[in-house]
Length: 554
Image (cartoon, rainbow, N blue to C red; front, side, top):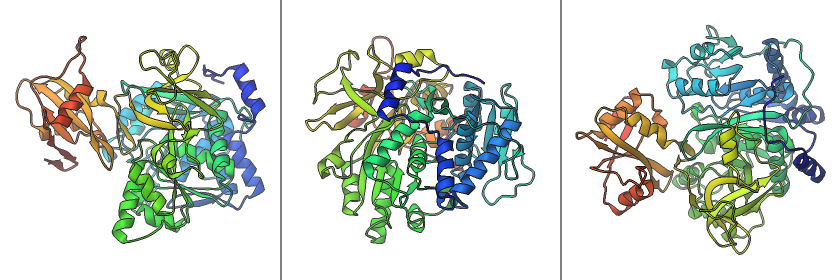
């Protein structure tokens, strides 16, 4: 057994158990409960398969047996890099069953080299990967990269949907009768989930969660919104995003069907939502904007059976929330992070202003406070803007193998500091004001400026580089890359250079500008807020650039 060092505190744990926020369940045991109670009831569905609870449990057991046979022990990390498909759910449950740690957040927007770096960072012992997945497509060979890692013990390959399963570059995903199984792990406080997130520098940190910290969030949401076994939850967000995990945990708590959306299936979300009779949809604001626009184009009123639309991952425009209400759909206006889940959300009986302009109140498993931006140990009064902080039963157990970042995430009194700015209004609801982070969020996808800047600085003519956000009505933000150089630099040529250096096409700048100087502070750091003001004021007028796989459009 490999024990992970965590923030688990016995006194806190006793308090959470006494209040019922933590219980004896694991993700696997909840799936086993529903397999026994309603074995033929629908559990999970993607564009190619639909499994009952009994079938899902059997598949999870086959995966657990295969991993056990490969010599994995409790605490080992199992990583997944694939499209949105049922297999990811089965692997997650197998990890919960055997005491392994499910490592997600390996997004489709990553290339194989990025994924290999993250696998090495967490000393992953097993990898499940889909052939040709990721930004690099068939050019990248994650299987060869994984085999070169000293900690790796097992590699499983899945073919792309509808592709031939023969000739796979690694062991096939388990489909036959499983080997002997170890005893079921019954420890709900053991780390079961490891997800990558980023701070202001964009450096990836691996967030640790136990069964209990994940399920505390789900129990609160299911209770507060009255979800039941008749609920059909469709997540537009991928399982590599934490929203996907929030969706899964709610389905496990409530015993209802979880529907996955695979963007590679080529089906419009409206058709998929209607086909599956979804009643509860989860995603980021861009998902809602695109669906609302498509409904308007079709002259269509309503969205099938949908009654609730969860929105998180980026600020929600008021007009988007109001448009959902106009369609007879109640928005679930959510604020949270991978580190503390979907802790803040509006409720079904909240008034229109609360739903459209705030993220409501913290759920029973969490509490928030606002602290002075210049002294994070001093709380501010309601109505004042400050840094949002929180604590409770759904907070992470720390960053894997990263003591410095774990310590730096809390103030002197143990409040987790989000890096986001907000205020609590007179009604006690949270209003998000902005972010103190540099991360650029394009349609719910986090883009790390530091990586773009680092790659741009490799260009022989670039002397300084800064990637900053440009506001966009639909996506929230787009990337503008501003450089200084020794000679005039062509924006399209620079995008080609970035691609050659390994920048994902999903992280490409969409605006480019060159200037004689960048605004610098006394320590020599680029003042990005001032640079953003230059762009807003027209002091610097960037050109529009667009990366295409077959070339660059200006």
